[in-house]
Image 1 (cartoon, rainbow, N blue to C red):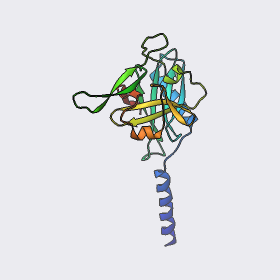
Image 2: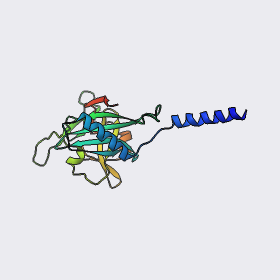
Image 3: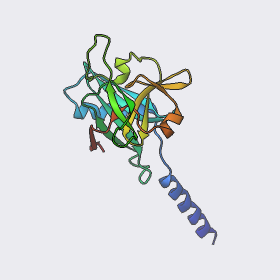
Image 4: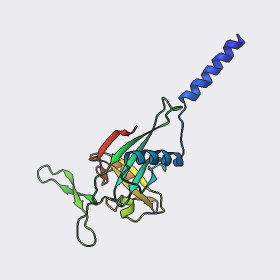
Length: 203
């Protein structure tokens, strides 16, 4: 009876170990992503990988910044079913280009409802620009913690941001926002889901 009891305890311990989520460090993630980038993007020899945080200050994405210009976003999704053997999956979001814009409210004359339209933002030289560099690089963000915040409502997007005086600064619209805006606003500017989603690249 004692042997059976010990066997059951052993099996329970093994099952708990197998079902536990294996977390890997930021450094390990960067190393893993870098190795896969070298295999896939062999034409790019100069790049860096950095973590991106969500609104809870947790690492949820990484950004691969290539030189001289080009970047890829990587979504980190942990595999809880086979965590002992394959702890992490990576999914790629490849952004062709992005533009600075904000949403402006207007009254639809036909329905008299509040609607929203994009208003593109000119640079200081008066021109509209399509960017291939990261929003953080364009904004000159170097040593600050970089955020990428998911927004879903009437539009869905990923908002590149940094913190400013207890709020977030949206690097696409250059407007400040907080979690109330995320939860209550109908639309927000960001990197839209028009870019490719490649579930096979890092799998």
